Image (cartoon, rainbow, N blue to C red; front, side, top):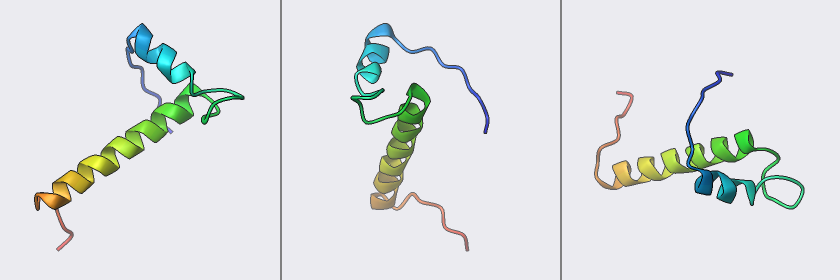
Length: 58
């Protein structure tokens, strides 16, 4: 698995941390960020599909 480095504003990181840990939905920050990226990409795919912009394997 590749590692990347990103800069995140403090207020966004604080919000992220509210969802991480024993009382949160995610085990760690990496898990939360991966889930967010997946969800965002899925939403973008749905938007592209509605606008007939998805590439097909033909």
